[in-house]
Image (cartoon, rainbow, N blue to C red; front, top):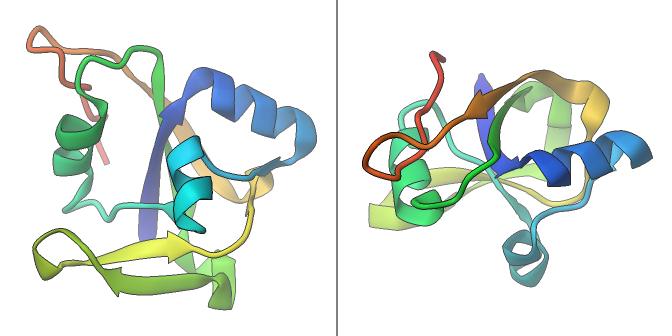
Length: 111
């Protein structure tokens, strides 16, 4: 299953330099890296990233993360994938830009 992480282009560039993404400030505060499924990513984008520019959507194969991925209840009781540990950049399937739409919400690329 493919899961998705929304982050800034700068955060991904810094991760590419070191080889691992350690998380956004919110991820670090929560103790895990937040991901979304394909069904959740649109709501995540509009709820948490409205008005934010220069975003990327990074796709990752959840199976490649092994036991570090935990599926935990969050918004509305849905199970969200949470990564307990760093995200190795080499595990990214792709990273695509998420420009802001006319309403300020990020436009989610085709999944």
